[in-house]
Amino acid sequence: MQSCEAERIEALSLEARSRVQTRITLRLMTTTPRRTSRREQHRLGAAGAKRSWRNTLIAYAFMLPFLILLVIYHTWPVIFGTYLAFTEYNIISPPKWVGLQNFRTLLADEQFWSGLQNSLKYILVVPVIQLVSIALALLVNRPLRGIGFFRTAYYVPVVTSFAVVGLIWSWLYQQGGVVNRVLMALGLMQDDRSLLGNPATALLAVMFVTLWKGIGYYMVLYLAGLQNISKELEEAAVIDGATRAQVFWNVTLPGLRPTILVCSLMSTISAIKVFEEIYVMTQGGPAGSTYTALFFTYSRAFNDFQYGLAAAAGIIIAVISIFFGFLNFKLTRGGKADA
Image: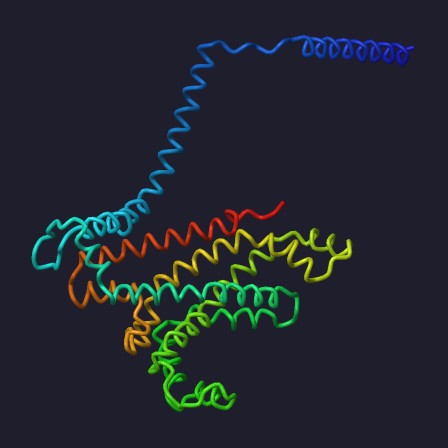
């Protein structure tokens, strides 16, 4: 009897619990969310804006040291150099405004035009260095054993000081040197004469050193570009029956267009502004055959102390660099990869 009574009480208790839970659920389902007042919305918006401004100020605070260094070491020298281009300045006396006189002097200076021609000849290195760099990047972009050694070996000249590189190649190019012996053995050279001492070969010899030293740098950039190209696209092209050459021309090369823009732009500007190779290996000789526009600027500034003339030459070189940069941009269609 007692057990039956206990079961009945327990059943009533379970039924009561079920009713309470049902009421709570219905109340939660039918209760509408509380509307936020306009004052509260304004307060929340103001707090969010304040937090956003605080984050912005913190970001600018972190950027401020770099911006200060940029202004001191880049922006201000550009502004001051542009001002000097229109003045006569030699350190001893204060700058004297001469207007466009420095530019007129440059246009009448045969040595400047000769240096500018040699700088423009140096641009011939650009397509060669791009083609060789792409070829090397394709070769080392393979999962082969020991491929890391070859990638490192090709990059070593990039991190080698140009003082060391210049001395090594000057020794190789000298009369009776290794390069002369090889060329004479191949029948490409008749007279055992220093390549750097011959006006007909000096510029080509220096250009080859630039090519040798810069290939590894651009190879790494092209290697990164190759590894960003979707492998699925290349595999799909192969499945459709495309040959290796067709895959390269229709898939790989269009995908490399952004990298080609960057590499060709940097190499073109470097070719126009070539200086280290000339300074270390030839000093502009022999007979001015390796005298470039930037070496002319250096000579006028630090040998003749004609800073106004040197600044004017620098502006002309900068304008030419911008022109070729724009030309590269147009030729590569803005570096946009084909979809």
